[in-house]
Amino acid sequence: MERGKLIVFEGADGSGKSSHAKRVVERIKNWMKETGKPGDCVYHREPFEDLVGATIRASLSGQVRLDPDAAAYLHVASRIEHIREMERQLAAGNYVVCDRFYLSNMAYNQTEHLDMKAIYELNKICRQLIEPDLILYLDVTLEEAKFRRKKDGSRVQAELYDADEVQRKVLNRYREIVAFLQEQGVRVSTVDAMGPREEVHARIWEQVLPVLEDRS
Image 1 (cartoon, one colour):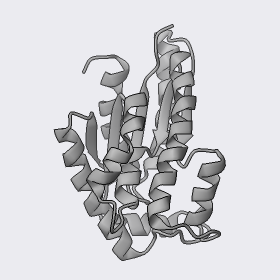
Image 2 (image 1 turned 90 degrees about the vertical axis):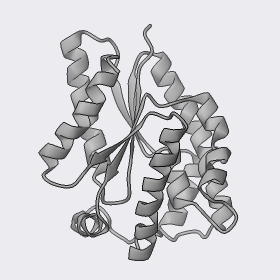
Image 3 (image 1 turned 90 degrees about the horizontal axis):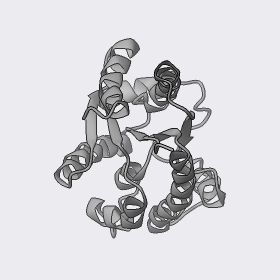
């Protein structure tokens, strides 16, 4: 059985990554039918749907309080469980589109004791277990991300990271992280996520299709 592909979407809250990731899932399914590829394409997201992931989600919504350093480590622990599941999917020939991965850990969980490079090292085991075939970072302005978050009716309550100053730091960190990972040889691309949704999706698909076809 030919191994599937792992495509990761990253970006700040309000970048449109979740909606674009889900749309890419449907488009890959259609591409698989057209090309006669066996298997399926599945959508995954982090935090993973496990006990540790549930604790992380509860902390994001303010239901429980986590020490920031502990939270950074918990994300890695949950990710290891998540990788085991993704590996099963990929080994079965399925394609996986993942909404957030270790870049989010690096962008959101920096503390006084853990900077970008320290969290990158925490994720060493994750990188040894699996490497995405493509990571797409959807880049937007702070103002656009804030507008989209307010417009999104599914966000019933503000999360831990919704404050403007926090989001500004996250956006700046993401851009630094992308540059750092590219220096490490990681296959990560920045997509301009501003403008009409169809135009953004076209930019995304231009990056995804060559990976599916092994043309780059």
